[in-house]
Length: 391
Image 1 (cartoon, rainbow, N blue to C red):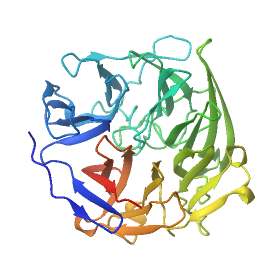
Image 2: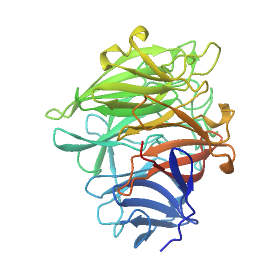
Image 3: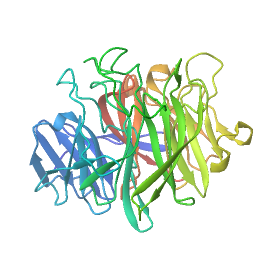
């Protein structure tokens, strides 16, 4: 048993911190996966108790985890992936492959303590049922800390036993492995040398069941070599185990296309912009038909928080989003709509100090969203749980 934290309240939701002494990394249904120094934990009752545990020396280095529908936990540290299919009784390494089935070999880092965030993601929903098969698909938010890394979209169709490259971005000359936290303009080039599409990292990968297609958006900068902000659309041919990805649009970092929180509701596409750089900014929460993403005049602006905002989740008619901490006038700023975007409110949870909410997980079986509170933009700090009040 782990002692729970007090529950607090705003007009629109209840909220509470995670239990002390444990970092709850992901959740699904009644399952929750967490870690502490040298230990992994799995709960089957939404984190009230943690009966399943295992020794894992690199627990504090975990930067990605996902709980699949079967209960399998897939998690990663730096450039290594693991999975457990039996509630942490055994942990096995995951096989990494290129698109052609050959071994995918991470680069040898200049600083072994900074192997790169190969698997870290800002999105809590990473698996979907696609034609009756659960697919795990995600992209890495990297080249900020932990060392430089190539930018990839990954996928698995066998419960995480094998993870393959769905798409490999090109070699961005501004994020080479020079041994620093986020890479730089000197050192080892990383990525696919044959792909001219470059980016710093992935913001979002998401599935639209109405089209049986995946969408991805990237960041961050405007470079002499081209934009780093792209939107891509991908389709997967299960029979051939083959992906077809197309760049829909590329644009400036101060446009609405520097974005995150892509969601699909009743066939419509929603997203939130963290436009920055030179003014004027093109910000807000937008909606359009998927086919209209490249046509600004066909977008509907639902709400503009007047600040960079890169994280959002939509579930059960609730839209929950957040301010980007370093850019926000609020300490810990949340944006919420309980009626599908008809009315909006913002709340500042000042007691947590300057924090950036990100990595939103869908509600667990007790109705709580899980949210990272990062210090700055990306340094791990606390985990918050939010439960919307009835509309």
